[in-house]
Length: 153
Image (cartoon, rainbow, N blue to C red; front, side, top):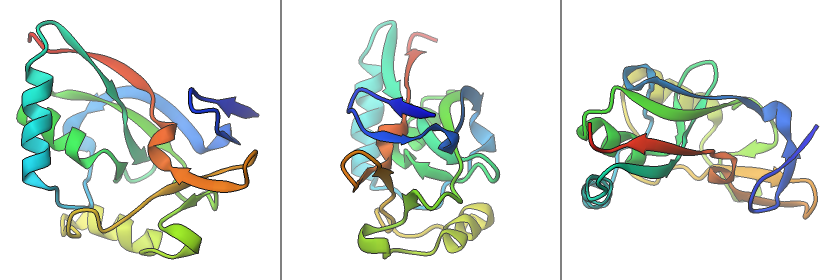
């Protein structure tokens, strides 16, 4: 199966294990955030009267460790959201990399940090997804789904 998203990358859809709203407390961050960036995002989301369209948080479908979306996670948590939009992915796939040219922190270390609540410094990891059409690696956020969240609750 091949899935085309709005950025026209081509990838194996078996990587996607589901899109849903889940309890925010089930997610496990693996990185600290840049507080200034999270504060700006929180204010921006709060500025919408009824709803906001947001990219889902990407997480490992087994451990619920956040792969992409730490600032979104912390902003939504600060705003009091109990349920947040996630896209669950098969993090063990070789089509997801933790850095350019196969470099980066090993995936098992990232999972261990997330489940232990010992966080890496901000922006320590860079996750990429392989595009079979261009034979190139792109930011994993391209696997996110757009969700409408109510901002007036």
